Length: 204
Image (cartoon, rainbow, N blue to C red; front, side):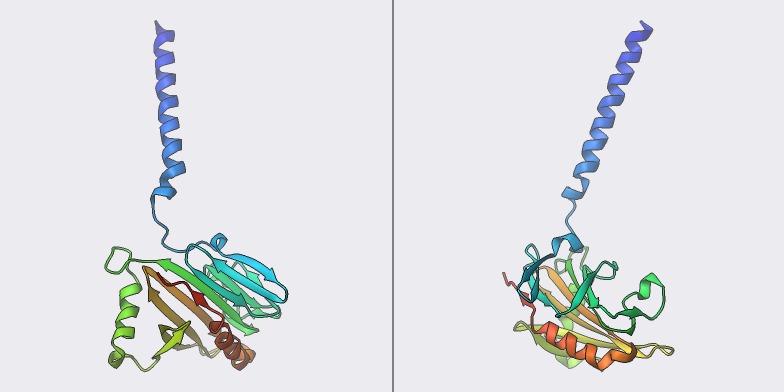
């Protein structure tokens, strides 16, 4: 009789474990992505051109020639010059150069007015209402799409600025950014402007 109860308990434990395992394996599939993961960006070498494509996000761009891809967790996809030297060893400032340049590209999946609308509505507001732009903001176009450009001036020990390009469109927020610090600021600015001209966004 005791063995019978033991077998029943073991069977229930196995069922519970199987149910929990199935739930864990499918949990992420049930929850929509908020930020495009790095593995969703695919690099293709086309001669001298390194083309990056995120099919789900409808995004393509070209890595500046001679640059390298880096996994610094500060953007969905990060790239930098091979001579890049960070200002310090802090992970949070790994994109701030003492020398060299860095560019990051991030895609957030946000529906206007939804619970995860952190950046869509706020950036769209300024694009739709340019009279309310702040001094550090302006409207530009990227791939013939209106975008909000922000310049954030920061730093005393290593003075420079962070340039953000926000594009809220089709339930997605595209963010392209560059940290313009260190001895190569002007060169990095030129690289970033040229990079923006390579961007292609598929409209719905």
